[in-house]
Amino acid sequence: MTDNEPEGGASAASPARAPKAKPVGVIVTFVVALVAIGGVAAFFMSQTYTSPNYPSGLQVATSLGTAVVNGQSMPHVALQFQTYPDSTGTVDGKPVHASGNPSWPAYGFTNEFQVPAHSLVTVTVHQFDSGGSLNNPFFSKVAGTVGGTATVTDPSGKSQTITQWDPNNIGHTFTMRGAPGFDPGFFLNVPLPTNSNFPTNSTNQDAGQSYTVTFSFISGGKGIYAWNCEYPCGSMVASFGGVMGAYGFMSGFVHVV
Amino acid sequence: MSFEDEVDAIEADTILGGEPFFSRAGGKIFIIWLVFTVIGVLIGFYAPHHLLPTLLSPEGGDVWATIVFFTVLAAPVAAFVYALAFYSLIAWRHKGNQDEPPPDAAPQRGNGPMTVLWLGVSTLLVVVLLFWGITVWSAQQISHPNTLQVNVTGQQWIWSYSYPGTGVSTHTLDLPLNRPVQFNVTSEDVTHGFWPAALGVQVDANPGVVTVIRSTPNKLGNFTVQCSQLCGLYHAFMNTKAAVVTPQQFASWLQSQGATPSAANTEAGTTPTAGTTTAMASS
Image (cartoon, rainbow over all chains, first blue to last red):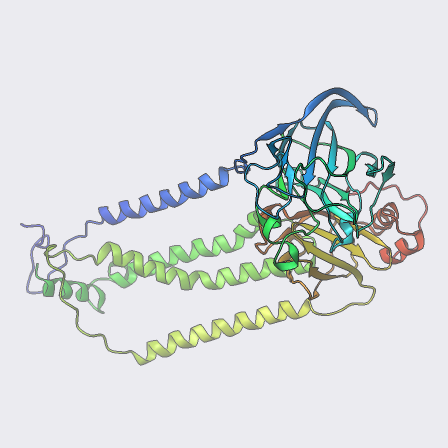
């Protein structure tokens, strides 16, 4: 009996029956497809967010020992960065951005920071760029810092403690929040002032006048926290295109480890 | 076996008479359809419990019921397609000469009663689903007295909220229990999606336009507001901590954000109550 002949042969009383199917190939294909789909799904679900490689590197916060906040002792670290008007500019010959773009400002010298978890982080920002009016005055308020304040030193050297700045004289903001699953309640916002006398370009980016803003916050749990500037200095829709929408200029990540 | 014999064998397997129903193709397909339908119905009843967040409003309950109802209705339809395809792949594979494709089968003639049946059933299903959806949606369009107004602004990549009449603007969303809320939603830049999933509502935030959505939180709890429209680099990070709290807690929270006591109590829908010490659900 060949493979194509029905088992038991045909008879005059009943028509020939089709040979039993051999569905091994179909079943194997079906199972392989299920496993492949499940495997791909499991892979993506297991991934945690990691920020893309940034050519300017990672600034690791400098240790300042320990501090006591609200009666609780914790590590104390420091970060410092600048906001420059020209991402193709230099400071003492050093580019402020690894791959600057003409007419784009930048946070320099990197947009990626690393701080320890549950620590007091003191940040000092030197703001060299011009600016203008926020399209949402909500971001002119200080939020999420220790004491709810920041200290601003203007170009003349005068210092003051602020809870809010004039929303019409904002150069940039430092606005930070946690990724989903990483402390979603975390929120930090500090306006970085400017005034109408600030130059829009400078050969040596550190040569112009600046506002110095100092604030402290308590870092959350381990994870990735995204930050970005909420003053729209880009192009296209509501000035949130261009530099605002390109990774590594007006946004970045804080790695809490 | 020739191709003609193969076709004859299949037809003998499927036409009336001969073998018992469940021994023939139709019966086997019916069994497979039944199994797939049961699986689909079970998924419809139990999946939402595991996939949806804890729902804090009657609108959320309506969404839950809609998901279950639509899934259960769709299960037998999908099961029929899968059963037929599955059985065809297994039992009706070409078993003749593998070097030559089989000749075309005889042309199929239309079946009037069957066509009327599937068109009728499909139309009935669609009408039922349409009526259900309009009913659920309409309930969310009704405005209630003593509604709390919350202005929601989406901006890459933060949600901010303000409570008119109190001077309060925040990055977190706190709502009083059992009070209707109207969200007036807009965007400062691109289209975002305002999605407090636990409240069972969602509406796009469009620049230059105010869209409105309503809900009445009826359970205490914490939840998250997410962005449901891809809006740029940090769309995945555009989420907000939110909470449904007691009216007294809401009034206290408004005061802590800078509202006057009278404005806070007015917006909370309460009169001042001494001695309220319940812990806040939100920071």
